[in-house]
Length: 239
Image (cartoon, rainbow, N blue to C red; front, side):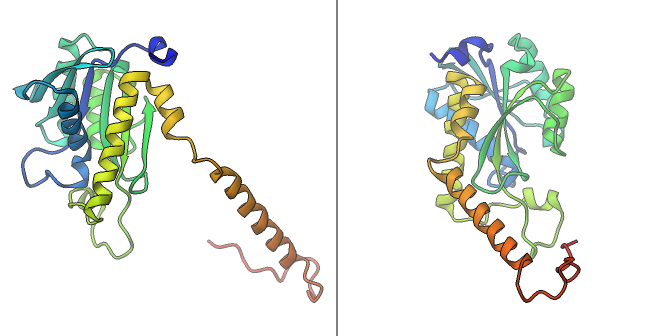
């Protein structure tokens, strides 16, 4: 087991956020719930049963016993499910891992986080209240923001089904499951180091592109035919 996992207390409760019922099952807002359902199957968890205002199952995780919880409250009341479950399991906030959708991440990206604000996510806001603070762990499933042609607000967006190709949605959820398993096995710090790392060569490529852009800008600012050496003829900065 990695040293990072030994330094941090083991996760005792994994929570998959979503709204209850078939109407919402395939929506962006239920991405976290779907990942935890996948985790339950991967771990061979017992059957989910009604408990803690949600569906609760027990499993054996990589470092010990683990509770899996899918609140069946609506999203903005998730804390009333998570708080009692964490209390019964004697799980401190940093032993609770919440898997949730995140519109601030582009579709397809998955990121981890320990503590922090709720970013306008009502489920996270409620869980912070239910646990007495925001220090819980998160796996963030990037569902992206609506494009310019979408008519509605952010709430309308996350309550719609994915419109990306099914194989891309499956790949997103699989990556969310993979990072969740990495957090359970190795701890959040190690999972972040692994999943947030750029592929080999990508950073060098980005640096080269930035240098090329800088050279192009420099050449345009020193055009020999420029009759305004003070730079007054440069185009205005975009607003």
